Image (cartoon, rainbow, N blue to C red; front, side, top):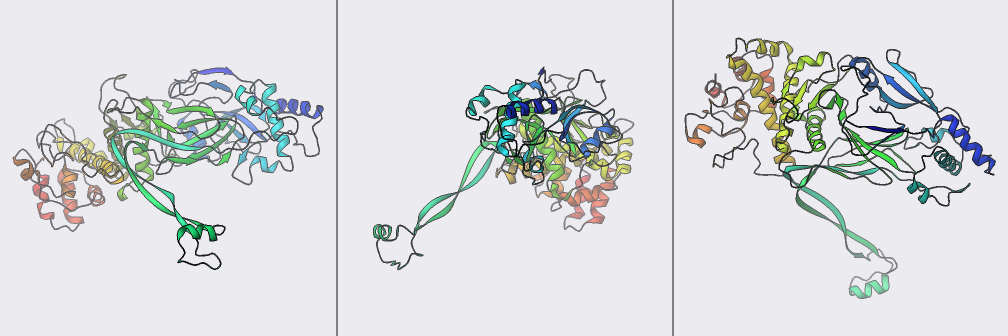
Length: 568
């Protein structure tokens, strides 16, 4: 758990800002363009009692919430979650943030105003930011005022003081900087990453007055050198690497109560929506609106980065590791799978349950099996009705990166199946009893296994250019057709069958593997989206088969009975 250090005296309180202004005004600072010290924001502690109340806060896009108080020392990189120890288990931990003075507080969520704030130095990209509304206050005076408030409250760090030795009464302070950088994760499967850059090619003199193309190059430079134009070309480089970009991660940069945010793109780069003049605390909260990664059961997974000026680049994981044994790497891979399922194309498939009014955010528990009972990863869709407990548990610690990614997609596929057709899903669950009735469970698990494979193939084969990649390879079998569930025997996998891949690919395991213990598979050419359409309304193994035959046109549909009959 993240541990709080000492509480810091708040330099942005109205009282301390007034003291700071009195100091610099008394020392002879000009007052014609002085900012009016008044309450521009409130420092607030929200105290939601239920998950529904927490969702009300998360639905408010004007709030940037933190699980820990913002006026305490927190050591960077230590701990990956925080819960107020005084809060009972099952109740959300308090949320902290700054809100503008005209903010309308929700009537259903408890809160406490911890301090009246004056924040004059909010340099947002938004033209209507607080600093813009404080005009005509002179920026030099604002910089001096903040510097003095920091100094008065003992929050002026040595590095900041050294960076501003000549600030003085009328100085402008440090130059503005924007939080930017790149976020990567170690993935032992590897990727072919392509990058492009512009490089100098030659000088073009054709636009120069009196240009003579027959002159040799050395004379052209001498005669037309003053009007030449540099020409460039684009080069493309493909590099094999195990450091791969994280897409869709929200990076936060916080200077006391002012927070700027940016989302990483497909190459892992981010740029925040504002600037600072002094160091800021970088952090990542492993969540998006529709889902949240939990450290264990209740703690929101976090990463506290450094306090610094300038770019922050971060690589999660350990170079050379062939198993996921770094907690932040674990969160990152689980996050990426969830992000791709919720916010990517997802091949046209139904989404897992989405966050909306009275429908809680999906919680995904990232568990280390070395700390807990050794159980398989699983989905618990009915736990979502309360919202406090996770509805997905990932237990792939110390496994390969593609397995962490793929199994996360597998468990989310269960939630999507349940949300797509809750009545059929419930009937499949009930038909599993008495125990031993495997075919209803085979519908549920075989579908999720197929989705798992589809997401892994898209990421590692298509996106990362691993042409020979095959998910779930069995290295004990020496075959070019190894992997993609094609080395599974019928009796060995009666529930987690290869049926989805078999309806898509053109491999017949009975032939390629050479034995009756393998499925006879003469079906091919279906899409994952068609297979999901066949799943809708299916309350039995044969019901799924019949839907596939009746709902889609396919030249191999006459072999569906044979394919499904391999198992049940």
